[in-house]
Length: 217
Ligand code: PRP
Ligand code: URA
Image 1: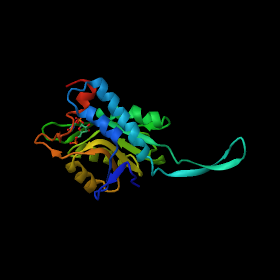
Image 2: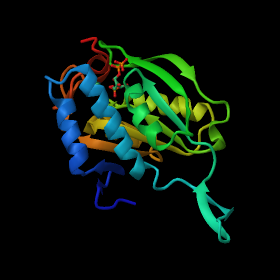
Image 3: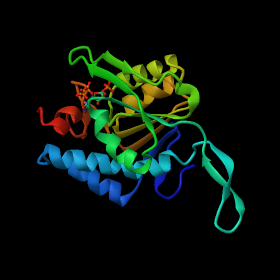
Image 4: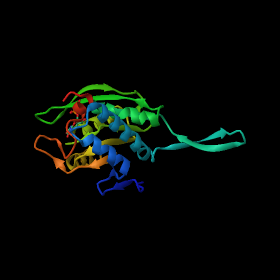
């Protein structure tokens, strides 16, 4: 459930409302920020978001022997799989693994056609037992929602049943698309932006996340 660090709108998306995340996001949005600092801030924000995103993960009770006595402890149930959407999703992985080093990583490669704005899939490398635990899809940008919707469909086709998604910046158009195509997936975003421009870029946004991350602008 949402706490003081998040707000949940009636669209089902959970938006983070946290000074540290807002501060780092200002660095990422700034056009003067170079790829090295961009990558660092993106990874740090992902690490900060993970605490809230994992709040609803299923747990199991196990017996643990402390030096004093045997007691019951809660541990996360099943294998967690993190799935970044290449390229830009890779920028959030290190921050997440700092908190959950035991997580498995699947990869989905999707590139948006700049003319049609439709996603084109070029890579699909996922664990064969995706239903063995929760799956967290990671992509900093939710613009039209086409890439995220296609990625979620690929996860379902591969067997995932318990899916969450983390993005950095979401546009209302993308949220609407996800609510329509995948209404059961909980979406976590660091910011809800205003709109898309005529080229499908998020406004105010941060530009092309993959290019800014890798210095290929
Ligand atoms: C960006 C971003 C998303 C997608 C969002 O990737 O990382 O995957 O665009 O746009 P959409 O919501 O309209 O589908 P892009 O296709 O630019 O590939 P890249 O990460 O390799 O630059
Ligand atoms: N992809 C990006 O990287 N940025 C946008 O603003 C929209 C799609």
